[in-house]
Amino acid sequence: MTIAPVELRARLASDYRPVRALRSPWARALSILPLAIVALIAAPVAFDVRPEANLGWLGVWGLSIAQSLIGVLVSGAALRESIPGRDWSRVAIAVWLVIPIAAIVAITMLSWQASPVSLRNQWWLVGGICFAGSAATALPVVAMASILASRAYPTRPLIAGSLLGLGAGLMADAGWRIFCHFSEPAHVLSAHLAAVIMSTIIGAMAAVRFSGLRGEKHALHEPVGAGGDHGDRSK
Amino acid sequence: MAEDHRLRELMREYQSGRFEAFDEIYASLAPALRRYLLSQCRDAAKADDLVQETFLQMHRARHTYDSSYPLMPWAMAIARHVWLMDRRTLSRRPWAPDDVTAMELPVKGEAASFVERSEVRRALGQVAPARRHAVIQHHLLGFSFKEIAERAGIAETAAKLRSSRGMAQLRSLLKGKSK
Image (cartoon, rainbow over all chains, first blue to last red; front, side, top):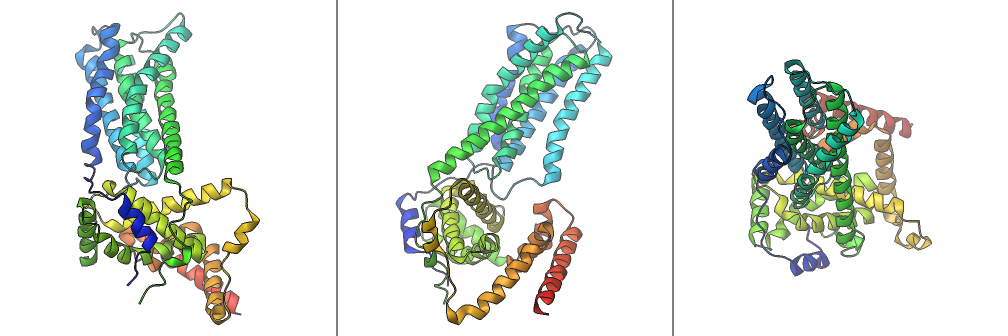
């Protein structure tokens, strides 16, 4: 029988206490829901709501709620990715990245067909406002999701962080989409989609940085005991 | 299957306050983890250190284990992470001449088996990465093809194919060496 080295055992015993296992990632993703609702209604409440005349309630609020829910789902996928051994396959990661982008493109095209509103003047200023507003709204959601992910043990922080940033970006943009009066694809796909991509990058960077700090804190290169102390005790 | 249930139960006990469960978990997982880490770093002493580091990280991340899933993939994922973190840290740290003292040198009596093992390791290193991983996971770590397929995101038949082609390549490499 292989016996645990004395030094390792002592080190673990020194900070041992019972722990409660984390809830399932999907259940934990639900704790982001209140923040998703705030992100959804913040811009419309603070500024304005786009005219519903052509799009209707479903076209304005319904599609945004759907986009926000996709964001919550992507955050759940990020939380699952943060658990060792539950990491997604390459195909699944591609699907998780492609579906939200495809959803944004589809919602943009639907909105444009139902209510074509072009942006003629100051496209850079309006684009800048939508980009900055959407990206800034995503930040608290990214922070919240990062805290949830860091409670687990992401072994691929870049992927987990990208997914949670993407989820936060979707939730934030769902709100800004309700406020923004312009449905022109060039504006939506440059300013709004760019904000979602920016949020994805911020999420990835935050996760990688946080993971680096955790690595330093855990001091990987403080060997527990001499290398030869293991395994040779097989009898 | 029974072993898997026993390990899940042990880990659940370890989470809920029975520290003694650690000894049984260590006894069950350490050999497989060591084989995996040895296949990655190809240095026995280093593998031993990494095994201990893996158990340390498993201890710190014990709350992330969900007992409705098998324990081994969870432990393996942590071991892989430990190995990658170690490699990354080493690549950032300049090599010190003092490291010579830490090198493992073969003793006379073990020379023959050491040569054999090192040849297998070297040949394994020449096998294409996807096939090598399939061979290691199936033949050394005991993962089923279904588990390998799930982890790699491929079909079960593709996992079998990778493993059998990897073994064939390994055999031909070793055959070439012996001639």
